Amino acid sequence: MTTRMGIAWIVLLSTMAAAQGRPERAFADGRLVSNADPHITFVLGSAFHYAGAQVRDIANIASAEQHFFADAGLDSVVGRFYLIQFEHYYPNNQNVYDLAGVASLQPVTIGGTEFLGDVRLRRLNPTAGSRARPEPDDVEAFLRSKGYTLDGTFVRARLFYRTDASQCKVLMVIYGEGLAAGQSEDAGRSTILEHVTETLDFRIEP
Image (cartoon, rainbow, N blue to C red; front, side, top):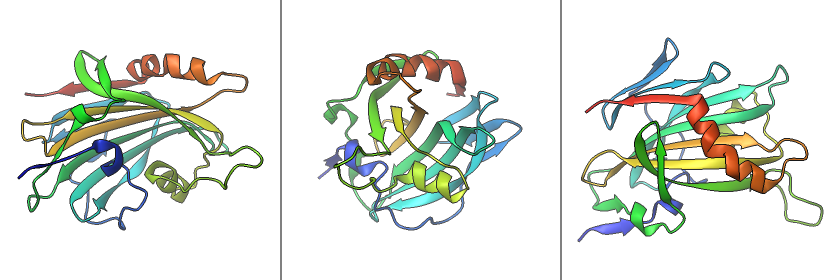
């Protein structure tokens, strides 16, 4: 029997185990190159600096290879970031990525390629009287470990692309940008996908 797991909880779990193994893909000469699952080359805007990569185990049922990019000032405060993640279930289970089962995901076309995506907010500075600062997710934890600072409210676009018919592998791209002073959340949401098309170039090979 095949188990259909919603990607909303399996992707980017904050309870992931420690980094494991070495990345199969490499960033060189301004390009992140993947030779499989999928065969794709990413080129980001010149403001984004490659922060590094790690491989994470997810609940002993899947693996995620993560590559991080940050646009930060001289003070190392991050204004924008990218996470490019290549994820797959281990062959010892029958789970699949049930993207169609996540209500928030809608078709999004970027660079002529159709993804399923959504836009979310993450507040890193809770207001007075609210509960404590949220636990860092993978993006925050990794970038902070490299000396970067993240604060404020970030708008995030999540984009998913299944890499084959098995539905056991998925490419995820997360782009995040901090809200500018005085910028409304609605304004941030309305422009973020346009900013992805302006800062991310890629080519998927057959």
